[in-house]
Amino acid sequence: MVRAGSANVTAGPTLAVVAREAGVSVPTASKVVNGREDVAPETRRRVTEALDRLGYVRRPRFDGGRAPHLVDLVVHSLETSGSGAVLHGAEEAAHDAGLELVVSAALTRSRAERPERGWLDRFFLRGSSGVLFHLAELSEPQYAWLEQHRIPFVMIDPVLEPPAGVVSVGAANWRGGVSATEHLLALGHERIAVVAGHRHTLCADARIAGYRSALAAAGVRHRPEYVRHAGSGQDAAGRRLRELLDLPEPPTAVFVCSDRMALGVYEALAERGLRVPDDMSVVGYDDLPEARWLAPALTTVRQPLSEMAATALRLLLRMMDGRRPESTRTELSTRLVERASTAPPGSRTGGHG
Image (cartoon, rainbow, N blue to C red):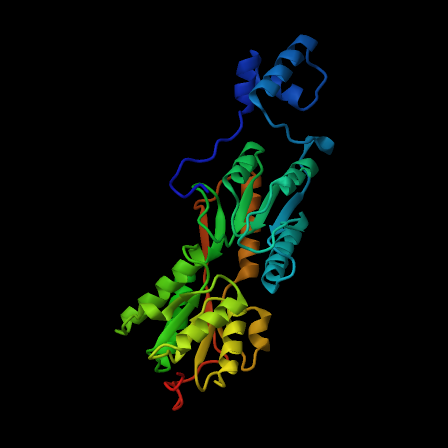
C-alpha cells in the first residue's frame, strides 16, 4: 500500500493531453468525448484514436450533460452498529444536500481484508459523482483506479494511513486515549492496562499513545506487560484479559479500545468469578448501543461516527465542485461517557491470580 509521503498514484491523461496528441483544440476534443455531432469525421477519428491510445477514461453521459446528484457509500459490513451510525450520518447529510445515496457493503469477511475491485466498476457505470468509503483500507491499484476515473472520494475512519493527498475524516483518538486513562487515574487506579486493536494502525497507535501520555503526566510508571493487542475480535480481547489476570501483579482497571472488545473482557471476567467494577474497572471506546446494554452499563469514549460521516459527505461535496479541502485530514473530538463500569479500586482487587 502507498504510504503518506510517497508519490501520488498516477492519474490518467487529461483532455488537454488528448487534444495535443490529436492536434486539435481542447473544446474540439471535448465535443468528441461528449458525443457532439458538429465535428468533422476525420477530426473525430484522430481524437478517438488518441483517446484509445492514451487510455483516457470517459465518464458516462447523463441527461442535459450533467452528472446526477448521486453519491455512493461503501461500508465494510451492513451488520454492525458502527456502520449503522455511519449510514445515519451520511444519509442525513445527503438529504440536506439534495443528493441520492447508494449504500453497499464491500465483499469481505472482515474489516481487515481488502475488497476486490469489481464493485469499483459499478461507480463508473452508474455515474456516481463521488464515493464515501468506510473500509479498513483500499489497495494501491484501487486508489489508482479512482484517480484514473476522476471520481472524488473521502475515507471515513481509515484503519491505515491513506496515501498522500487522500482526504479522510477520523476521530481525535489520542485525546480519547488520554481521557479514558485520566478517568481511571482520577478514581485512584494506577495499575491500568490497555487492550488495543491491530498493531500499527492509526486508531490503535493513537489511543495507546494517549494512554501512555496520561500515565506519564500523572507520574505513573508505564508497564509494557499491560499493553495487549487483540485485533478487533471479542474472543481475542477475552484471551488478552485472561493473560493480564494471570500476571504476578494484575491490573485493577483496563482501557479496552472498542466496545465490541469490551464484551469479551466482560465475559472473561465473569468466567473468573470477577465483577465489574468491584474487581476491575472497564472503559470502552466508540459508545455504540451495545455499551448501554451491558450490565453494568459501559463507561466509554464516544467516537462521533455519525458526525464523521456527515463531515465526510460535506467534504465530498466540495471536491465534487472542484474545490480541495484545506487539509486532507479532519479529526472530530471525542468525549468520555461515564456509566457504571468504573469505580475506585475495590478491597478485593489484587487477588486476581
